[in-house]
Amino acid sequence: MSQALVPDRTCGSCTVCCHVLEVKTLAKPAGVLCEHSTGTACGIYRDRPSACATWHCLWRKIGALPDALRPDRAGVMLSLETDPAADDPFLRARIVCRAVHTPEALERWEAIEAVAMFAREGSLPVWTAFGPTASLIYPDAEQADRPRSAIGGRVEHPLGDPLHGPEAAAWRQRLGYAPEGADRPQDR
Ligand code: SF4
Ligand code: SF4
Image (tube, rainbow, N blue to C red; front, side):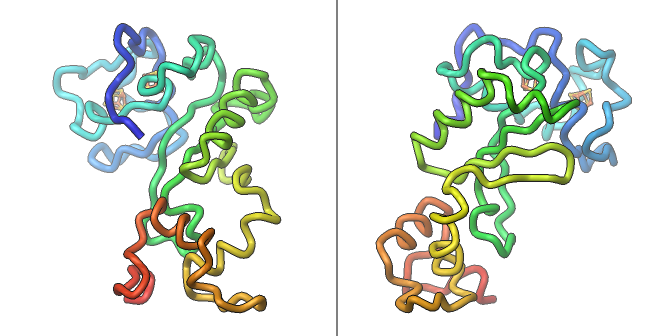
């Protein structure tokens, strides 16, 4: 996925990520508006931490997402999230459509279309989330069960051959696992 920003698209008065994200260097927890936010901008813009300066939501990175999906307008924030040590392989690298203030925001057509677009594209798992509750949308539950155990390699799948199916191999590559035969990160 490209890390370049969409030309001529700016945050404007959006400060949603200043509310949603944890900023470790500021000891700012997730889900609380940063004390440096003015409500429409960063009050320490020139001196903000590099974690803030380098982070952008997917609305800033993907031109196919409509203007209506600017997070403060849509009530959802789309982002690429990673957790390289997660037991569930579908949490290691994922697209998340996170409702900011109310879960109903996930039911708006712009959010539904965006989730569907990332699912069609298919390169990463797609989740929706509100607070601590998250749902795996792509692959769906039925599709996920077999590769979930096969990708991670921790749980033998009852249908056998868990590590060598092409589906599992494709997911392992997409999620950044070492090639089969090499040491797997989860085996440390
Ligand atoms: S959520 Fe996106 S659009 Fe809003 S301030 Fe953060 S990076 Fe900018
Ligand atoms: S320091 Fe600025 S950019 Fe970073 S979270 Fe706080 S208000 Fe947002």
